[in-house]
Image 1 (cartoon, one colour):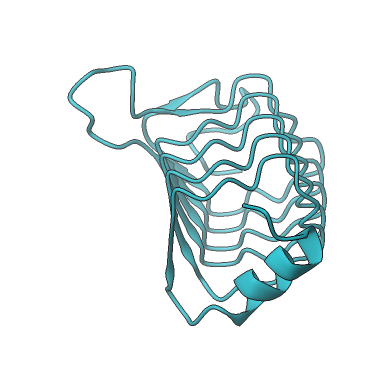
Image 2 (cartoon, rainbow, N blue to C red; image 1 turned 45 degrees about the vertical axis):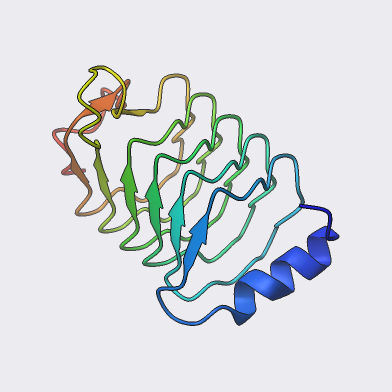
Length: 146
């Protein structure tokens, strides 16, 4: 993607409710404070992206790479993450209320599992979280019911 991060933020905010966003590369971009309308991200790259204080409520992330992304203080209320890579992501103080973390059947396990190995969850709100097929889920969460 060649657009500036401000233009990218504005474009994402302007997309209609449940609009698909496929195979886009947001790696390393400044998307802090981005607000979206329950977008459906598929195979998008957010590697090392700055998503601090972003509002991603109700968004769907399928087979997305969010490894090393900074999501501190973001809101992902009701979001769905399936088959995503969140290794080393910073989710401190993130509102994850009602999120669903799962897998995608790729036919080749362990591919398709969501991986949160090394992700930071300090201060995250984990109320009514559901998990299935997640690698490295924080041990302080009892089957998604914090």
